[in-house]
Image (cartoon, rainbow, N blue to C red; front, top):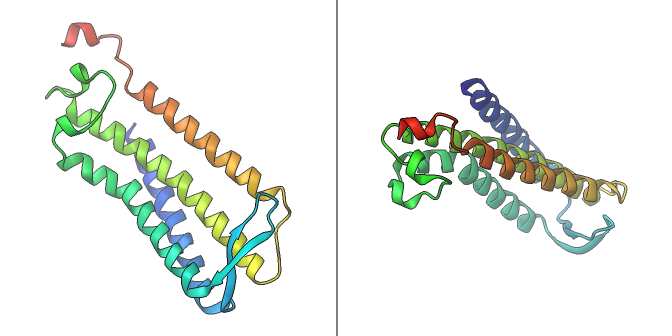
Length: 172
């Protein structure tokens, strides 16, 4: 599991860095008026200012940091009573708490990676639309479906991660 944790965390930081580079590039290359919202068909249905776009992009960057590394750090300082886990009678014991924190943090790294990939693609799509290069209408629904499937996989994986081990009855 340690290898998967490292991979999820590294993937997050690579995607987050890519997001930061994209937003910095957009700050200097996009026009003053940029798409603020794209409809389901990929067409611009609301325009906004570049500063509005950059403020939103910055806020989303903070959200990604909070969901990825921030949640892992928070798990380490929150009291156990504040953390909701399946089978708390097993995972919140002294013998298993550090493993539970690592399992949850690893899951959040992967979720934050999926979110960062989705936001990177979405911001790239908005930037291209601002430059008069709209993407085909099918791209955003495909990106959204992929993100939602990743979220479902994350949720199911989290349940699997916190299932009681076969020897749990003996170790309580």
